[in-house]
Length: 294
Image (cartoon, rainbow, N blue to C red; front, side, top):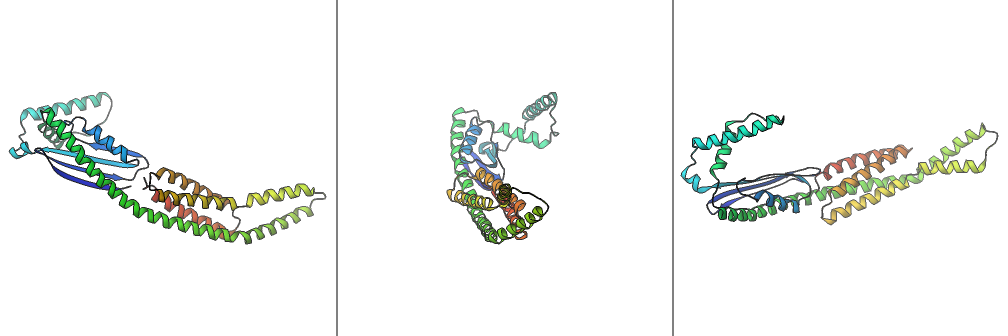
């Protein structure tokens, strides 16, 4: 499910900006970027998100700038630049030894690393205070982020409810066709049986009755329609729960599609086949929407 939230502010001489966004994903994928010099911030922020989000590709960025140094102007001294270049060279050398291909470094990479070094704070108590305050700010942004996902979820629930009702209507239409279909199948069976008996001198009545019963059972689609009804009912109940239901809905989509396929293969009736194909289209459309559900 998609969502976005952003926030900014100031803490004890530091400016911060936090962005959290998500795009659809079948599983859970975190991509979190935090200042390396604030020890423990990455793990704490990641742990907080993992408690609240169970599906989606989540991108979060926490940016911190030292206003004191910014106000005085950041000086790109030779020593800082050399230090940054040495770090980049160390990474590239290690990657080459391990056979890992990296894209060529750019001047902007050196600049980013140099500025990050320039923002390093030596006061440990100040770092701890800054981390705690940033976590509070991060939790606030995440709350807004979850709210945006909930808003989208409410709209998505309306769409899925409407699609479920359309499937129910198709199931009802299919059920109404069964009596007439049964009559035609019975007439066909009797006609074929008469043809077979004309060419057979002896036939065991009990065996014939067994074969007819088997043919009737194989052609019966009542169970498929009943299972379709049950799956749709379960789907609607999941929508009302408002919990983490994405994976459960994925499973129901597979089962709905399985029953629709069986209905088409057993139909032996053009109208029932048309309904089965329409069901497959509707289920496929619903499955696309379910990919957005957490």
